[in-house]
Length: 121
Image (cartoon, rainbow, N blue to C red; front, side, top):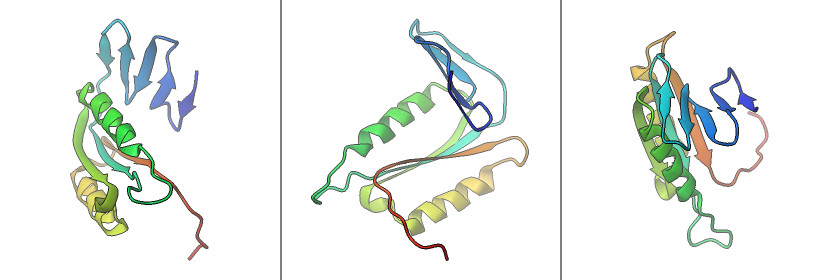
């Protein structure tokens, strides 16, 4: 089994996935535990028109589909390609932060795309 941070994502075997406290099984059953809402920002960049295009919008679409199966998901903001600027991402994070109930809710940032290194400021 794999886990990330406090166990919000873990493999439940070859036929099940635990994601945001929802267990999805290939049998079609979904079991969700009660907890606060999860508010999500999805950023996916395909880099269209460059020498290194990707297909990250598929990743973003797949995460959206998975989130639709969880009844504890609150707001979901999606920024693809040219809309996924640092200013737009920061504004979306602030909006989602305002709706998070402290001590109850979670914020999930999902990014799919290239990365780069910059010196610390």
